[in-house]
Length: 125
Image (cartoon, rainbow, N blue to C red; front, side):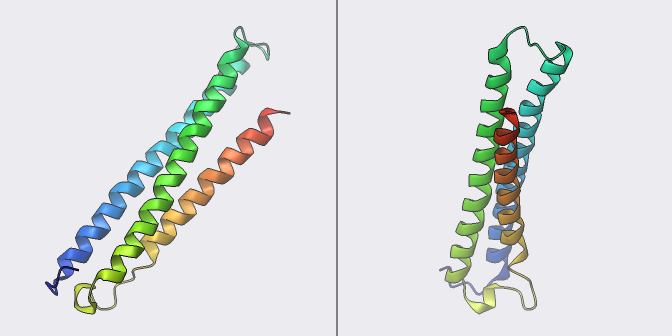
């Protein structure tokens, strides 16, 4: 792709992956906090929320943030792996592990999807 035979190209791509990873983590964390805020409001009201729609709204937006975070994490990992196929061998530092960043992103996406599923299942009970 770049024909520079320069490992800085790889490290720039890895920094981009990590930036998207931080964004995904922030969105997943925000989704968790928003969803749990609905539970907190329900506890403050003694199980009978003053506005029942608030609990469903926090559930909806919490799950939405979780799903957006999962999509961003998975897409960033996929895009990074696709980019690596275009690099020459000289552009990837010898002995450097290229699987850990994308694997972390896929694990984050799986965790976010599991959390969203858990919130949906437990909200009906």
